[in-house]
Image 1 (cartoon, rainbow, N blue to C red):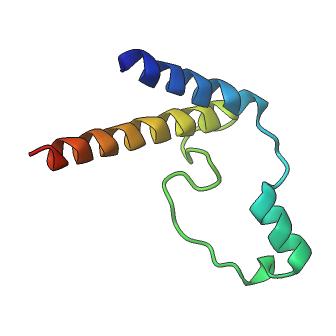
Image 2 (cartoon, rainbow, N blue to C red):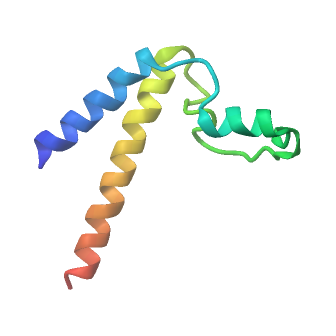
Length: 84
């Protein structure tokens, strides 16, 4: 299990250096359909798939690794809770 988590972190961190700067599919569609201007901004820890206190591709890589670790911790906690 540890190897799978490490592999997921490596993929999430490494893929960030190959990420496109262009909008993703949902953002692009909202621009084309004309309703992107009605979107509201929300405060988020990892807004824009990056960490605000780090700049560059490392910010996106660390946000991906952090996301993997948060999701892993959540599901391990859920599994432990449901196994009781």
